[in-house]
Image (spheres, rainbow, N blue to C red):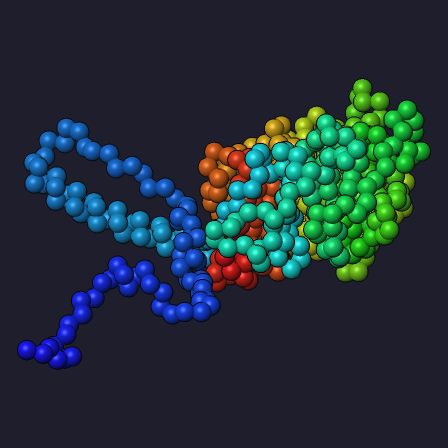
Length: 450
């Protein structure tokens, strides 16, 4: 008997079907953004429910205890739901619901900077390297830096010493240049691709008058750019000076500000620990504010002259404690400092005498000198890290915490920033992790679209 075609039955082989391609030619891969967003969602932070403990010697029957336990369980579930709703409402105010984690360094991350467009991230670390990350070329499986640079390495000597990186910062006006400060007397300018542009000169350490030296004579602790002039930056050193540099063609020293310490036994010198250059409110001149190891907080007119400070607070923080966190609000009216004396203080630049608000906050500058504090882009909040690895979002008037969310458990947060265009918060911790916190609803291009 001849078998007809209708009688032939072909059994489906699912394994073979999955192995063979759906079609031939170039196949396009589609990115499942929703799935990646769900995968990057953080665990709800906030109140931790108390552990349930059993009752001992209640003297009640097992059935009665079981009924009470069921009712208590229902109440606990309702309370937990209410707590989760409250936490979600709090977190919805800030871009912290999701995160992207980068592990590109080997040691604590001391500084980070993101260009104005939010496409390129540069981080510095105590592993003596500067890492360059390009979010446009990253995928969930390739979360790595595209370039690593040792800013203190010398081509002339293969056995040259390397030094920790204290500060990195994109030029806010012209993001083609990055200021890099290592623990040496010379600062560097790198391009956005990591190529060297210029380097400051080292001063003569045998000259007594710091005004006559052409550069720092000892380690530079930090630096920053002028808020509006693309060619000017400032560095702060352990030689008791701030030095302004003209970076138009190469780094040429423009001005020297010598801070004369009034502390007993200091011989008029101290170490400058932090510096910030704030924008001018209502078109007035900008403000240059610096902190020193002798506990003083000093302010100059940002456009000069620099012969005498416009205001000085001698005992802003406890003497011989390292004030590593310093920032000026976007409107230039308030200054926030995080001192080594376990305090955070808020200052008014118009009445630069005593703090507006003060709170207690354990310091980490004894181990990590660059532990920072920052205003949000709209000055509606202040962010800083804690010794336990939590991000603290503070009220800008009272300094009381509005949200505390854990980021890197048991590993202090050292550096952080809040990007104005993307509305995303970046943190760098002592465990060498960089966390990009964002919210799909509040942030623009959440973690650069994963």
